[in-house]
Image (cartoon, rainbow, N blue to C red; front, top):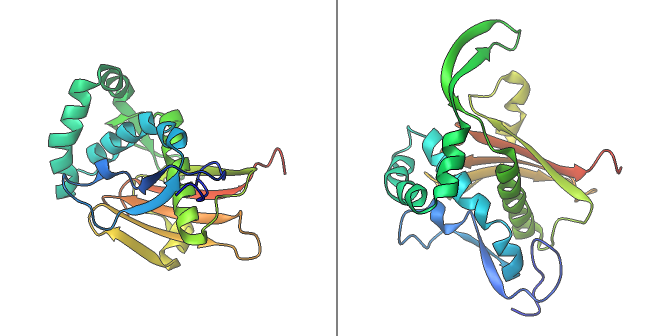
Length: 215
């Protein structure tokens, strides 16, 4: 293991393995189909605070998925009980009313919702994308390459149907699946569609590339 390169920082000396997605996204006792990649313990620990947040968020949103509902009533509830700061953070993010508008700017309705903590989710998505990139290429994402993302909560419009043409990889049919493309002539550029519990509910669309400010 010591001669392995860490998927996140790209330095040799990986002393543990990271799981993508983390084991807590799966039911208790599940060990199959989890992607494992070499990592430094310190790099693993750097995103631990974002893992519970992302798992709790995705389970709470995906109410139509039976495994997500089961995890919410078990792991998520225990997580919120034993972690008061996280519980307060998620309660703070709840919104009584969110105004919804059509793409043309027409007011539709107001509905209860949640304001996503972009700092925590950015940390989580960055690690997942870098882990998947390493899994497919055997190399860490090049330095100077950033991960940008957005959450697609509803079914995509025609302008985003491009990702349905990408090949799909199913890690677990009810928990995690993704689509991706990595440009062969410019390996730092890639596109990813992450589906946690459902591919079209709270789908994360992510791309990697150079920061425009530094390009």
